[in-house]
Length: 381
Ligand SMILES: NC(=O)c1ccc[n+]([C@@H]2O[C@H](COP(=O)([O-])OP(=O)(O)OC[C@H]3O[C@@H](n4cnc5c(N)ncnc54)[C@H](O)[C@@H]3O)[C@@H](O)[C@H]2O)c1
Image 1 (spheres, helix red, strand yellow):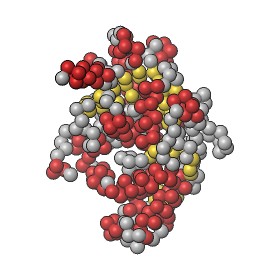
Image 2: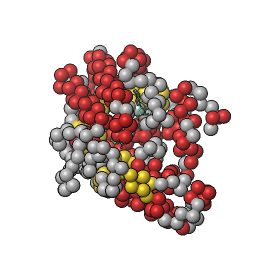
Image 3: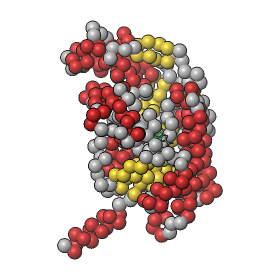
Image 4: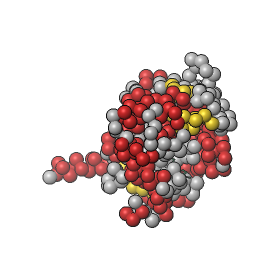
């Protein structure tokens, strides 16, 4: 009895409390599912629930006593301060952001507010909180800023790769706002000694991805018999990483990354956008041929080759041609490697969307947004 009490005490003592900002988003929810399922840490999900936040993505872990949700805007500095006082976190993983490049072109203001001012508010609160810490809690405190390879801008279509030393050269309001936030994080380390780590990752794909992004958009449009819009000639090259590989890498960097350092994370999966869309079509063609798309038959109609739905549309302004990550630092220093190939990850992703209609249907009909107003209920499903 005494022994088990000691073990319980030590377990409680060892559990770390992690703030995850943006935990209701695509990558944040993957990080929370990973932490609740694979560690003993306690998670506090801090999310404003913008259109991109969806608590349905956390349904498999939200009953855990180690999961807490706080609907807070990261620009609300007073509320963030109160959360630091309430939970006394051991680390912050900062993922909250406006993340869609197209939206940043048509409405950049909210990108400046959340990505720059929001990061500043978090940094200031983390700095004051950190200065109040002592002993082990102070030694182990970390602020992990999650960023993108888009801060590096365009790569010539050669064998060049983004390394951690590539100069920043962002092209879109989104990537410029993320670049600004990266600079703030580094400045708070150099000027105030805040123990930070940074990661810059390539394009993610996988489960629970909001259907405005390329891969889920193409899957859902295809099974609804709608056109598959491809920018320009579809020759932009992106380096794709399965989101669960990213979540694993982020936790590893939080635990093992060196203070003040940044780590590039990528999947070694360079594909043109057109290749990606055609590969999705090929998977769906195969499933259609063996009758696995029967439940979507009314929308699909007589389509036999989904590639016939591909439609080229006017290119996005300032569209970078190629991103490609050199992930050798995280591989050599921390021993991380992606577990999914693009082929295996894409196959799993297509199947997930076909099997999880309830998740995306609530996005398409808008009912998932009732969560934001605290109105979610069975009747709305
Ligand atoms: N998706 C990618 O391919 C990718 C690649 C590399 C890096 N990143 C970075 O990873 C992070 C997460 O990306 P994602 O794709 O999961 O984004 P997402 O758009 O799916 O999710 C963002 C989340 O942040 C929340 N949020 C937005 N503004 C907020 C605010 N002011 N206060 C509190 N919460 C707010 C939203 O409600 C949402 O839950 C971002 O910082 C992004 O820049 C994304």
